[in-house]
Image (cartoon, rainbow, N blue to C red; front, top):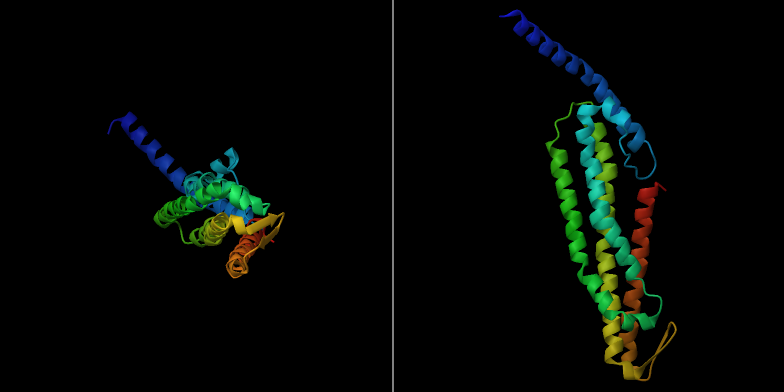
Length: 231
């Protein structure tokens, strides 16, 4: 072997050995990051990696990207649109049940797309998580961080979808009923009166259904806030 070839080979071996020597320290730093910045903190935390963090556990930054990418996708495709649905779907008067009927129906029909986006984001994250090759001391710590920042919030959002969809349906159904019988129904603020006693049971059923679903949404939102805030 020529001298310069031998020197190059030795340099490659040295680089490889140095890289291997760095791995335990990088893994230790990553475990500490997951434990102190996510698992030990109350509530929901998805820290943004600093340049210093990236250097400390560089090989494992791609592992953390599984968690970070899920949450950025969740915010873009689910959280922000859902907040818009809740704002637009909020009814402040009975008049709005009729005047905003088309908007409410459109929101209800769009819930399937939102749920599909959540399922897609979670499936991609779960697949990436399952494909990770991790040492025995890292895996259980990463799994806890993954559960806290991916699995639990995804389930909390999933739990809201049925009630929100059904609440929008209840609003739309009440709007349909009021439109069909508008000549026999009088709305004054939050009070509904009908001149036809035979309509009273069905009217009461619509109002009660809307009230029940509104209460269910409030409960689901409280649970979601508790998960995010750690309270």
